[in-house]
Amino acid sequence: MDHEKIVQDGYDKIGKRYQDLGKNRAISELDELTKLLPSHAKILDAGCGTGIPDTKYLHDSGYNVVGVDFSDEMLRVAKENLPHVTFIKQNITELDFPDNSFDGLISFSVIIHIPREKHKPLFQQFHRLLKPDGILLVSMAWSEWEEIGEFCGEKMFWSHYKPETSLQTIKDSGFSIIKDWLVTTPDYYNEDSKSEKHYYILARNS
Ligand SMILES: C[S@@+](CC[C@H](N)C(=O)[O-])C[C@H]1O[C@@H](n2cnc3c(N)ncnc32)[C@H](O)[C@@H]1O
Figure 1 (cartoon, rainbow, N blue to C red):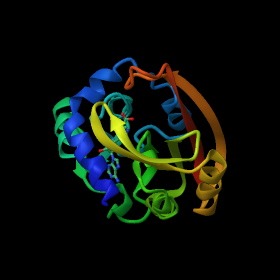
Figure 2: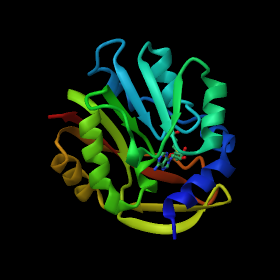
Figure 3: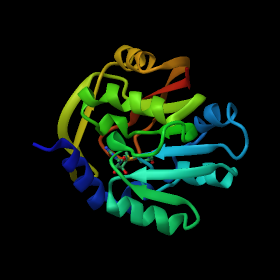
Figure 4: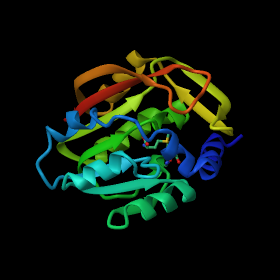
């Protein structure tokens, strides 16, 4: 079974509903990244979705931001939302930017959808794409979990390790950890759940 196809098809069907449900989502975690970057830094949003709110915040703050996603529908909405931003359709496990392309890289609520045996090569690739001393900010899951289920009424796939393993994987991929922290937010996307936990990791390319 092609797990990544499940995710791609799922987000093609969910589309703008994802943006609408998460419209009150906070973006304050992004400041942990931006305060470490020079103005006009080049930032990759890996798995940017519709670009709201994160790509937009970075663009509006003056950064040179590029969004990548593999869902046609999420990208269609992103381009409609932010016509002046560069959006590219690619699987983030196979990015073909040259080495040292970016000063910063964010990936929020995306790596949770990538088969966990691919997490290490993914972070090694992020290491390659970031300049020396570039900054990585990712949100991961708070528990070890792999499942095919339902999200926003569509078939979906999740796969992740426990936080200790994610942290070690990032260290082993060439990063030094600046900080890691847990954020509990309302679960905007699931009526049956009151809250969800996001595990953030901020790291420097070394
Ligand atoms: C939960 S949404 C998060 C979107 C955005 N980062 C945000 O926080 O609003 C997950 C997004 O990741 C994209 N995605 C998941 N796996 C991907 C992959 N392997 N390559 C590219 N995009 C991927 C999906 O298409 C979807 O737009």
